[in-house]
Image (tube, rainbow, N blue to C red; front, top):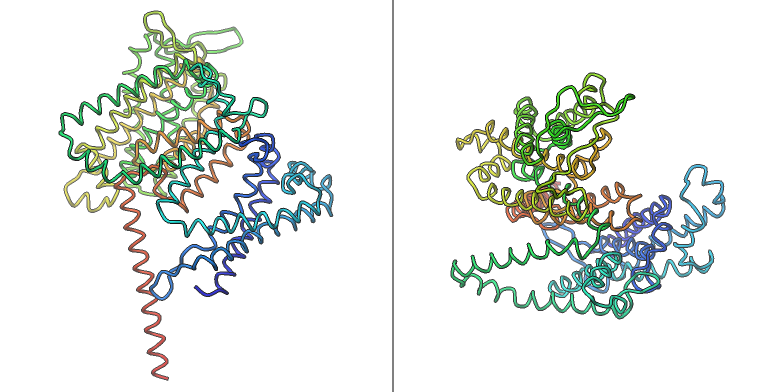
Length: 591
């Protein structure tokens, strides 16, 4: 790879990295995260973000390129030099911005950019003065960029072990409000691992987590082939027994979790469970059948309002609480099958008009359906039925044998049970004839029709099945809160569910679980993230689409499809380059 090309790419990557640093400072994220210490007091989250941007810039700057039908990769020395240049460029852009802000004046900019403060500038300057901070930022960014570039040349097993070790350490540091509580409930002293005052990992705790996770990952990778071979040699009866033991252990862990984490964290995990159930339903529509639905909140709202009407919720009026125009007084467990039946009908009503649409057109139409539902539930026309802007009150607590589930710890059991049921149904569908028909329809609808698959019936079935789970999540959401407000059923709910599916991996049930824990669990556990929830969603989606389009825990079939598409694109690009060189050579001979 030519040095001039590598330098140009490094400067471009560094410029983008510097722009990212400026953006993080201008939205207030750096200052907001400054008090959150990760390891001791030397590594707050804000400083990690400052160093991550140039590191990513260095990693991107030395990516391979295809030229003249060949894949070109820079050697270690030029790669690290280019990474350092990219990091230094990112630091220099941030320093130039700091000089500009101080020249204009922070107070003058706060009229437009309210989050530009001396605190944000201080984070970029590592807590030093302007000159000293600039002198430290550029070399530190260059070193981070060189480290990012060096990752490209680390052998695969070492890179995976190191990456898992760093990710585990970061995760334990971020979970500083839950892991100590769990250790304390187990009768263990958490303060050798977590700092009693600042909350982050102690240096000893960080080293232990880093070492254990790194060595464990290395040993697992080294023995994976042997373990997989032994698993294949195990008789089916023994595999079934091991699987049953694993399920029993999982159920035991889920049973003791609320007692270990307490009411506050159980409340957060209950919200994660609601969105996980909704994402599992959307995964059937998007991941299995390939039908992009941006109005999935319509099912969520239908489930909540249907449960309220079937279980005797009340309207809020100027004269007090009054029953809706149409209301029943069923038990929660008797109402759930009717809620799912209504969900199937709503799925058919939404799916029938869009049978001939695909891709972006389908997404726009379903987005319109979601907005229609939101407008209807806030309209005066349906106010005697659903309460309009005031919504419904006194939703059932799903009591069984006199035990209600409004308490966060009890609700955790309720939503976990329904999530496990949804996972079981999703797995059975994925491995059934219906699931194979959905996969064929997702990969190529015209070929599926030519093979005799009734795409009309299977599309309607996907909408009905996914809608049933979406309505069920809405019903549990109403049980959790005890009230139903129209503001809870806006378009961002659909976007959140879709982000969970995309982040985890479309069509992957474990991926949906991981996506829900990351996108709903971490912002709930870390109050600092709540203000930037949607900013994080956008950044995560952009990163996952560029770096890992198959998702964090991808479906094997989907991953192979994407890899095959990439191979075909690379082959086409090489053919075009070869054709261009052939035409150039023919032109030179003719002249």
